[in-house]
Length: 162
View 1 (spheres, one colour):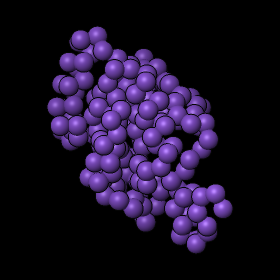
View 2 (spheres, one colour):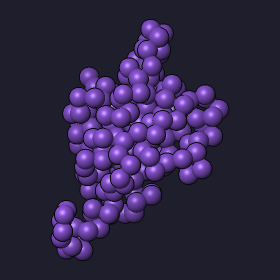
View 3 (cartoon, rainbow, N blue to C red):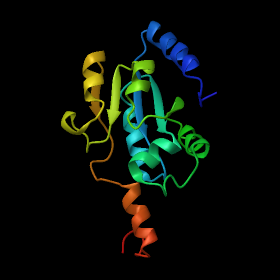
């Protein structure tokens, strides 16, 4: 099963990969409306190692930082969509606003983030440093924003290329 909701089961799986000398990569996001930026990000993350674990923010987590009218799709559906990418090995979720707690469970070798993140603006940077996790900047340098897409659609502005 590619979707793992039991964090203890997830810990056992990644521990087995680690014991086998495999490189574990963790990436995370809301994945509210999937777009090409997500595909490029996940493909870039997968290229950083042998096992790609993707953490998806829970519905409540998204509401805390994107507002009460988000997410647009429920967690189970967002997780299923992310799991459908062939470059993704495992998908899990987390309830906190940041992914620090799930990083403690997965303890990846690499934490993949989009190129718009740096140590200065990454909330989990202290956790990465403490655990010795390498930060990898992956994906398309063009900022693809789900929030901007949603705002454009809600305001009735024309679609892409207009």
